[in-house]
Image 1: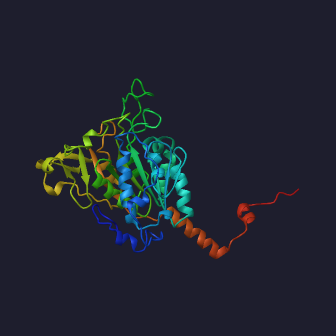
Image 2 (image 1 turned 90 degrees about the vertical axis):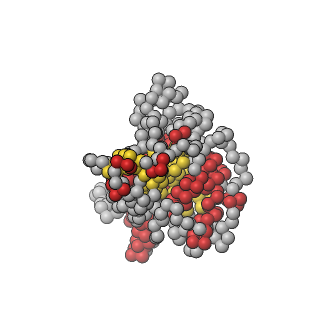
Image 3 (image 1 turned 30 degrees about the vertical axis):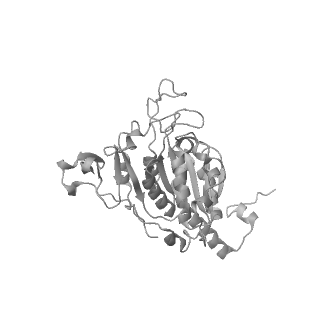
Amino acid sequence: MTTLDEGTDLGMPELRRDGLFGVPAAPDPGTRKEFTSDQEVRWCPGCGDYAVLAAVQGFLPELGLKRENITFVSGIGCSSRFPYYLDTFGMHSIHGRAPAIATGLATARGDLSVWVVTGDGDALSIGGNHLIHALRRNVNLTILLFNNRIYGLTKGQYSPTSETGKVTKSTPMGSIDAPFNPVSLALGAEATFVARTVDSDRAHLTSVLRQAAAHRGTALVEIFQNCPIFNDGAFDSFKGRDTEGSIIPLVHGQPVRFGADGSLGVVRAPGGGVRIVETSSVGDGDLLVHDAHADDASTAFALSRLTDAGHLHQAPIGIFRQVERPTYDDLARQQVSTARESLGDGDLATLIAGKDAWTVPA
């Protein structure tokens, strides 16, 4: 597979040639309208989910796949209504279990492009174990994690990404929990594709989602997404016109610099981490050059720690890690094929008994 860099043009002819990783190509993949269901979209006015839905509906035809070969699996939450609004196969499943269901589906059906849509509460609380093991196994899934730092569907309780001190209906005196950093969590679980984007930046959002869809293995994309009802303004520093000092763009092969006229940059810090400096105080050669394709995820993890999960003053945006590793579902299908070639269909009773069975005399 050719590894794709930020901004790589994933045009329709390229993806339609042979389909996506063995998934049958569609002779005519259709238009955005054909991937849009007839269901009325029911999210609160101003919800960031609308922007993500529009971006996904817009680029799905570019995958060059038949609609029946695309499946969206969601858990429970506002974001989990996603499958209703796409004219593909989909399942609105159970709380936190979407990665487990999607793992089974991807393993049993190699002809499908399988997506998981989840939220910060659904994925990181009750679904935490399912998420990290999907990432660890490198199942061929594309996971969209909508992070609004609150429970929206159940009306405003604090979530695993809410900042310490957050006052909500379930934490009237302020949360005493330390919040998760989803990107750090994914990198720690050895995910092969980890990215972050923002719902209000349509171009960046679409670019990242395209590359996630083209990745062979588990791709996790954290999407900063505003909840205008229960957590309005949580990401104001990353939206609007004045974002130069808060958004740290990550582009593979480029020095990490940001701020007005690139006045700020990232350099390596003593002890193996990274830190932000004024570029006027260092040479251009001192700036960290982002390498999303490095096998060792240590530097990507260090970059993820630039995000203050409590206050979110600054955050790297882009693809943190993009590497290749055998996928769980490919290996499982290969193992089944090898077993059939050497053993035939086999006998169920013998399989259950195994080699270590014994008979207890009467």
